[in-house]
Each structure stands twice: as structure tokens, then as C-alpha cells.
Length: 128
Image (cartoon, rainbow, N blue to C red; front, top):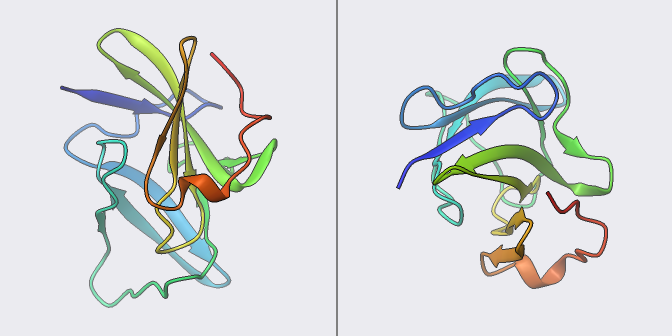
């Protein structure tokens, strides 16, 4: 199955190849990170020399328009748009390193993925 991700602000495609490319930043540490496109797969591809401490909170930005991807309605999560099988979804994922919490939202409802998904309140998440 193929997942195509885009920025919810400028609609730029964010995974032209095998990973979702985002701009990651914490304080003065800024770099491109690759995330596995399969919802619930938490593999991240970091540049050499960059380490991420579990529990640290990160900001993610679109590498094209540089808009912050933090969800206004759920500030512990970031949001991306995703199309899979011709169906549009909104995907929310945790901004906290090491936390496994992903939410795939569509007209059919919300799919919770990851061992930490139960720690987030979802009443405010946008249904597409």
C-alpha cells in the first residue's frame, strides 16, 4: 500500500520517495528528518551526528513552506494530510521523542496507533 503525505498548509508532497521528509527543530538544533510513511511505524532516519533524547519535545515544519505543523487543536501533536487508496486522511503524530502515538482521521472515524495513543484526548481532532 502506498501512502502520499502533504503539508496541510501549502499542500506540497512530503514523501517523494520512501520517507516523509520534515524539518525538525528543538532550540538551536535544526535538521531534516525522514519518517517512515506507514502509520504506526516509528522508524526515523536522522542525519549523522544527531541524537534525539526520549521525552524531548520537537517542532516539525514543512520543508517547503516552513509552516509549523503543530496542531492548533492538539498542541502535543503535529498534523499532516495523507492519501491512501484514494481516500484522504488527516494524520496526527506525537511531537515527543520516543512516544508512540499516531491517529489517522477520516470520515469513517479515528484509528489509534501506538502504545501511547491512549494518553491523548481526541475529542478535538478534525474529521475529514
